[in-house]
Structures are given as C-alpha cells and as structure tokens.
Amino acid sequence: MADASHLKGGRVGPFQIDRRYRSKEQDDLGTDLGRMYEAHNVHTGAPALVVVADPVVGWEPEESWQVRAYSNSTPAYVALEVEHAPASGQLPNLAEMLNLLTCAVERLEHREEARAHLTRDPKGRQKRWAGRWRRFLRSCRRGLAVTAITVLGLGLAFWLGLPGDPRGAQNEWHAALGVAEESPAPSNATTLVQTGDSSAADITYPLPAKPFGNQAKAPCKPKKGEVEINGGCWVALEKRPPCYDDQAEYQGKCYLPVAERRPPEPTVIQP
Image (cartoon, rainbow, N blue to C red):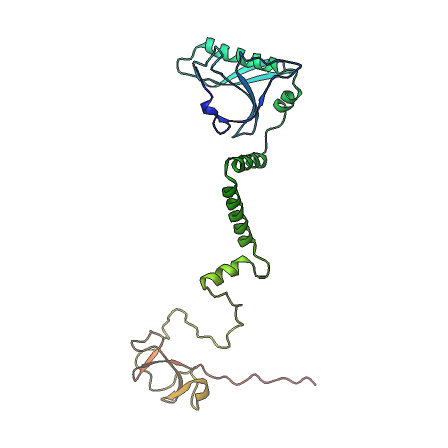
C-alpha cells in the first residue's frame, strides 16, 4: 500500500501541495478515498486536485497514466486525451482512475474554495517564485535565512551603487581592483604622420644626396625637431636600422623627410 513519504517537501510528482481539504460540519469528505489536496502544477502554474492514497484505503494505482479531459459547450462534446500510457496499459485501470477523480470532485462540489481554486487562472511565474521563497524561509533555520537575506541585500546594493559615490558600483569595483578609470578622449592631435601603403615614390636607401622635390629645404627648424642633411630637412626617429621601406637610413638612424612648406595663400581684400 502507498504511503505519504513522497509528499516530503510538499511536492508530489509535478504538483506542489498548497493545502489539504478537511471535513467540515456541513459535509464529511470521508477517508475511504484518501487525502485530497489543493495543488498546482509547478511547471505551468495550473490549478490541480491531488488525491493521495492513505494506508487505510483499499486502492492503489497499478499503472501510470497521464490524461487530459475536455468538455466543450459549442459544439457539444467531451474528450479524453492520453498524453502518456503504459505500453501494456489496461482500460479498467484507466476507468478506475477516472472514477476515483470523479468521486473526489463530487465530494468537493459544494465547497466554494474548491470551485474558486479549480476555476482560477494559472499562477504567474512571479507568484510561483514568491511561494518557493516563502517555503525556503520556512524550511531554513532563522540564522541561515537572515544570512541569505543579508548576502542578497549586499549584492543588490553593490550592483546598484552605494550612496556616497555618485559614480556607482562599477567605479568602486575598479578602485578595489586597482584599475584606473578611463579618461575622457583627448582633443585632436596637432600633427599626424601618415603611414599609408608603400608606393613607387617611397624613399630608398641610402639617404639621397639632394632634397626631394616636395621636401622642405634649409634653413630647417631645430625647435620642431628638424635636422639639415644634404640641404634637406629631416626628422630623426627612434627606430634604428633596418628602417622601414618609407624611411631613409643615415649614420645608424632612420629619418623621415619634412614636407615642403608652402607659402600662405594671399588674402583677398574686398574693396
């Protein structure tokens, strides 16, 4: 005969037990059917009626069936959909299961709380998680529950940002790890060196004996890092030979030519 050991934790199969239906002054549910419970499916939240066999009753399911019943008013029909059946299932066992559930519903047919439960909408995910949280608190010792709540609270405060630092928790995390905060992007550079693809006009070794046609000629500007070599203005690089194919090599250093300085455009004065 079945016992109630599988109800440990308020769960039987996919159903979470919410509360037990007990006899009242106006009706007697009896004990021959077993214990009847208000429950819901933990996966879908759908309301359910669960009947658990007591050791004193005379029935016990011999096979495992999963069925779904339909009743429709327009068009008028009833249907039984079998979701799972034993490979060698016997219809008398199916009929016995349906008869048992029918008797349980008939004994609860005048209970308003049973009608309200079985006709309600499925529980939402948020409500199901709230119920699990309440059950967790009941099952934990007080000290463990307080510790869990404290840890959750500290974690939430950390991610939302604690008061006193308007930059929020992210900067606090960077500061704890010794990571420097990102600085604002600087303004545009005053001078850029173009490093496009090489072409036939690239400088070849060694440094030419005369300035290029588009190169700045002496006098050069030492305050801008220019040096005069063979009458042309050059900028020495930290790069040491071998130099890149668009750089000139001279006395163990790499150089780039200074662009020719064009005279400013004349200003047109309007009469």
